[in-house]
Length: 79
Image 1: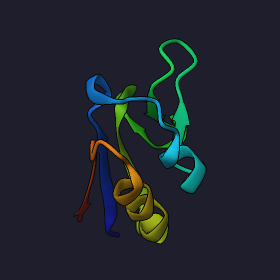
Image 2: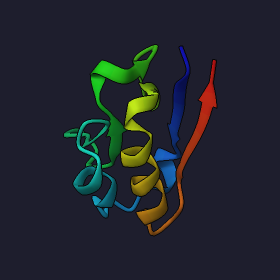
Image 3: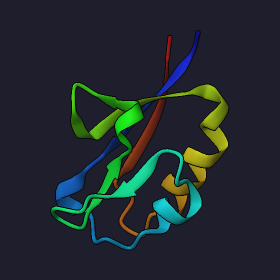
Image 4: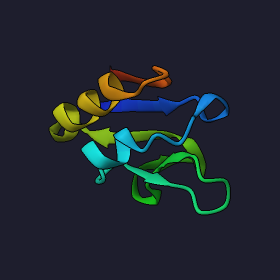
């Protein structure tokens, strides 16, 4: 089943929250540093900036990536 690999360059995050507003199923603000993170359910290896999400969330994730003012969210399909 196809999934989407989602990565966030957290070092460049400006905490705009556009991703969280548009796709709260996948993105959240980390309470420790105030930067965007992948929700625990979809994280890969506990990495806050890397996740695999179901392809059903593609529209949501892509809108969040496109809305990010610093373009730090990358989305790609994986098998």
